[in-house]
Length: 159
Image (cartoon, rainbow, N blue to C red; front, side):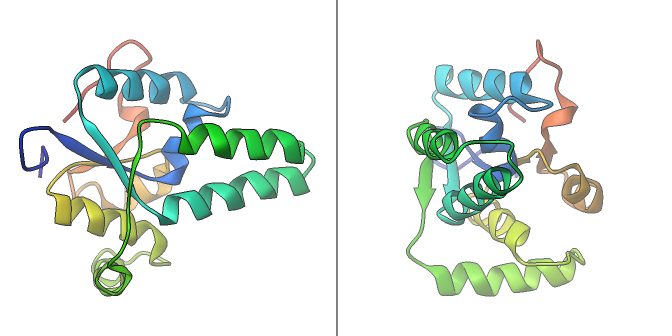
């Protein structure tokens, strides 16, 4: 699974990567460069609607810890949803069933990450994450799962 089907290539991203587009964190520069490159080359950047809920929770947890104001969290969420991101939803039963199967196959502790993996499999495209723990668990068996730490701030790869 290297590129999406159809005329334009496609990638799936998770909340850990997408949040780096709107927050300053380790690998934020690489994430922004990757998004810019995808936009320039007309790659369709997709994610399940789960991404918005996960991002909202991460931002809220930072509010609770005093790391962000509620206003900053809401602005970050708004900025995230305004990016070149196509959200996929509508067949939650299929995504959930697929996630259970994938979580078991890859011995994941929960199904959330497997939802993104399932979307990537269904879309026949790479899945990009900033979650090194997830990448460490699956990349040997699933080389189509990519970690933002694989790329440097100046070099961005699509495959």
